[in-house]
Amino acid sequence: MRIIIYLVLSIILGILTGHSQETTTTTTASTSSVSISVDGGNVDYEQKGRTYFSISDSDDSYKVRSEFHESKTDKIRSYLLEELGDEYLNTMGNKYKWKRSYAGDTGYEVKLSNGALKIYLDKELLSNGMVKKFKTITRNIKDYTSGRSSEERTAAQQKREDEKIKREAERLERQADQKMREAERLQREAERLKREAKRKNR
Image (cartoon, rainbow, N blue to C red; front, side):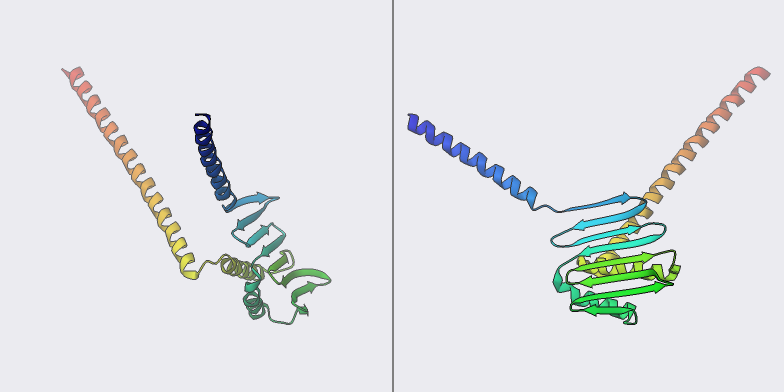
């Protein structure tokens, strides 16, 4: 009898232990995505596998830090060469650095190595057009490293616009209902005053 009880308890313990281990594995394998604000700048952090992207945008500077799979480095390098050229480019092995200075101060600096990218802009030295250009470059690289295609971005943008239109339509509908109820209330009030006026005139 003791042996049977022992076997039953062993089986139950084994099931509970297995369930606990499965839950821990699922939690460990999960990914996260958060957006926070630090020192007046926006920092976007997205972790999925080996992808990391951080953007800090303040009044006087713009900074980007990214880590991604090394296999994507060549395509990013080609894209940066196409956008920035090689006039302000220095290379050392597999490291590429674009740096443009104005009167000794760094206007922008872009560093690319295998699986890593850093961008720094001094927004007080650069024109608005140049800042916008770098933000477009950053957005395109972020989309590429996160694996999102242009079709997915278009679909996501369309979905956001549709939801915005839907919320606006619902707001206008609520506003129209409110005005209709107010009109009905005023009409009832007018009829009441009319009845009172008739009683007084009798």
